[in-house]
Amino acid sequence: MKSIQRILLTVLLSFSVAPGAQSQNSPPGHAPNESAVYVVTYIEVTAMSVPRAIGPLLQYREAVRAEFGNSSVDLYQELGRPYRFAIYEQFQDRATFEAHKLGTATPRLLDGLRDIQSAPPDSRAFQGFAVGPVRPPGGGRAKIYSISHIEIPAARLADFGALARPFVETSRTDPGGMSFDILQELDPRQNQLTVFESWSSPQDFEAHRISAHVQQFREGLAPMLIGLYEDRLYGIFD
Image (cartoon, rainbow, N blue to C red; front, top):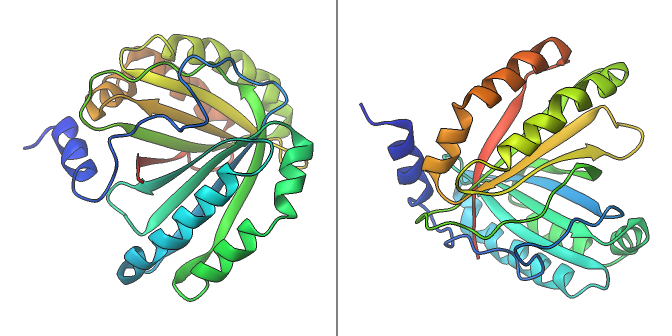
């Protein structure tokens, strides 16, 4: 039976993803901006429409990268389900994010996807909960990205912070890690959090996933969860 590392690597290389260079607006080693607003948008199209989705997504990325106050925007395609995409954006502060929402890039993207989407886009805005610097990528052939959704009761946020912060610090020392951040949704859904991870290779990600500190974190998190811990794996594409 193939190992999970071999399976992940095979899937990652099976569709059009770039080698996974850092966003042109997010150089390795940059210090986190405490005022930043992060946005994750999930997009799903019909399986036959994947090639048609690429154009509107690339046009959106280039338009947003040119906006004042945008720090980064990257496009991801889910491993194993290439009809699902994620857009990961960072804006300097709330004001530049609000200005972005008034622009034309998002309406143009929605128009371009309207006839091929299988579900409406789901866009969520965040503040940093535990955000650290980006490390240079290692020598892996294929970069891999994990986006996980966590929902807990608002009354357990302090407990979650006590559990999560040492876990994040330890995870950032794992070999092959490029970034490991926890984001918190803006009001009124601050009890919903997203873990964003980037790794130099599927093997590095798998070594982290089965580590003792991940198991300890998941065991401590389980009693707090409102719903299922949802995680998705992606490759970046150009």
